[in-house]
Length: 257
Ligand SMILES: Nc1ncnc2c1ncn2[C@@H]1O[C@H](COP(=O)(O)OP(=O)(O)OP(=O)(O)O)[C@@H](O)[C@H]1O
Image (tube, rainbow, N blue to C red; front, top):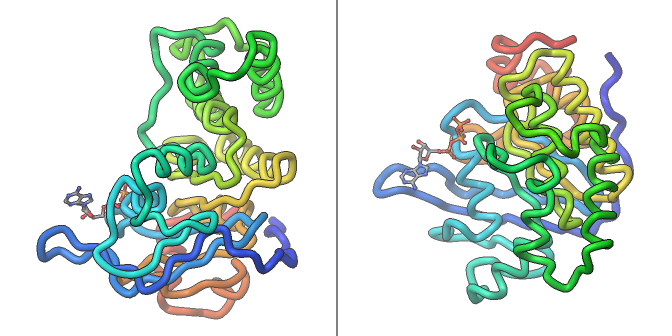
């Protein structure tokens, strides 16, 4: 399998995290952690369970406060923002947590309409309908518009979840374990979708995963979250062909195709 090429990205940082500390009581989750996301890139954060990947996302969108360090998102210092400023920022940063489910009692259409009803009251009915159609087309599921989530496969539900996040046209996408619980073929489809989203909407993205195939297929750069910080950052090849011992545990638990 050919991994994704490194591309020359604009040096503009859309997320800058510097010397970040976060602890719960005496339990340190992140310590002196530094990570940048450049405009237009897909950055994969590889980390084992419980290493603080979800905490990282919550800090980026201001759901958790850092204890120390800089967290700058789209030019704004997240921990200094007012509630309204945070809500505005969250419209520009699309995030879906691993377990964020679709609303089971709503059709696919209504699931996609939901974020627009809440956040885009300025849109006319025709614009809403057109956005829903565009998003379903982007994730390749136009035919499911009137179906209920229970009628969809796991992979299709993930796609609709991505469409629901994407419908607000965020500049940054945060994908939390996008391939978790999916078979290898469906995982590949999701990886392709993440790349399609990057290409079509010029999003910058952090993809949090422990799936090495996903890292290889979608990541322009990879960082490893270990020992409370981002220990290695570089292209997939740089990290995994280097014989780096820190990368070995990921190989032990993954099957690369
Ligand atoms: N609000 C909280 N209060 C106390 N501890 C927390 C809180 N949120 C997270 N933690 C702890 O921080 C650590 C990192 O949690 P996090 O959910 O970020 O892990 P993760 O890397 O996303 O794991 P997984 O892949 O299993 O979801 C865990 O030990 C967790 O118990």
